[in-house]
Every structure is written in structure tokens, then in C-alpha cells.
Length: 222
Image 1 (cartoon, rainbow, N blue to C red):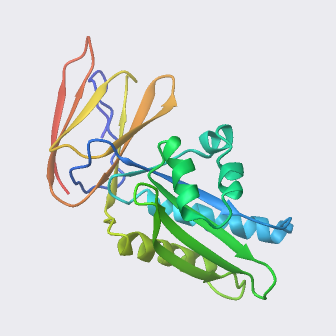
Image 2: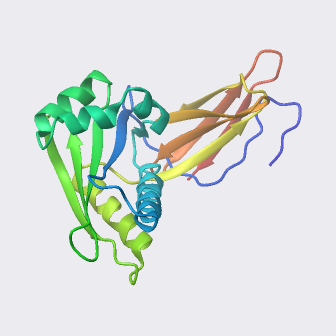
């Protein structure tokens, strides 16, 4: 529904909600290739990572660390320097305020290539879940990758919920939820922003406020 002249322009894509932690956990996805990948393997790796990111978007209270930030901090180099020591990896990632990391390794010495994943809790300094995936082109690889990512996150105790996307215009409009939920704001363009909210099903009140505009209140049962 379009509300021209109000503080909020809301585009509801998917709904559900849950109260989030005071600070959402930060998750980094770190693929590690010890050999120069072929073009095919590079494409497959990128597609698998995209499926993990897709799952992460629905994990309650967990936000993804952008790849640009990982690159700027040289996280890949720091993780490689630690070798197989999870304690060392955890210490390096904690300095970057990264709470969780999915370490992905690829064994190209076997056919089909094997990909092993470890979900590391950097505060605990240990792996809390893992997965193994055969990169077999004859299988529905992307569906399997998504299923493994869901199982791994659930095994680690993190709930999989829904995704509520609220687009607001003007871009300085403040969006609040009652009860509160984990929310990540992303700029769309110069006149609107999107608030991405990870949530579990329940009733909620969405409010949007901006100076010079009437406030907007919308009650939704998701």
C-alpha cells in the first residue's frame, strides 16, 4: 500500500517477529581455497555462499558482516595465519567484533569436490556446528547447500524465522517496532531506506516518524 504524504511508504514482502538481543550477533562467511580455483569451482563456490547468505537473512538476531568489511580488515589473511587453530581464529575475529563465523574449506583432491563448513562461536573459542557438502553437479546442489545451512544454524541454537522488509520515505523516517525486534537498515537510494527485520510470528505495531510529517502507526499480526 502506498501512503503518499505520510512518514512511511511501506512495502511488505514477508512478515513475522521476535525480540532481538541488545546488539545483533555479527556473522562472517569465510571461504578458504588452498588452490587456485577453476572457473567452474569459483562459480559453484559463489552460488553456495549466496545460499548460505539467503539462510542467514532469516536467522533471528544475526546480521551478516559485509564482504567489503572483511576485505578491508584482511580477515582472510588473519584466518589463514591461524592454520587449524580455532582458538587463534576466534581471537582474531573477536578483535573485529565478529561473534560467529562460517569457515568453508574445499577439498579438490577428490571427485566430486568436498566442502566442509564449521560454525565458530568466537566468544566460546570453539566450533559449535559443522556440515559436509559434496559439490556434485549432478545433484540439486543449491537446494542441498541451503538445507545444510539451515540445519547448521538450528543445531547451533539459532532460530530460523521470517523476514519483514519495511521501506520508508523520506529516508530519515525512524521505524520502530513494538515489541522490539532485530532490525538492519539499508539505504535504497537518496529518497528511501529499507529496514530488514528478522522475526518470528506474532502481533506487532510498526511506527514511522519523521520531522514535518504526521506519524504513522500500523498494527500487523504475522
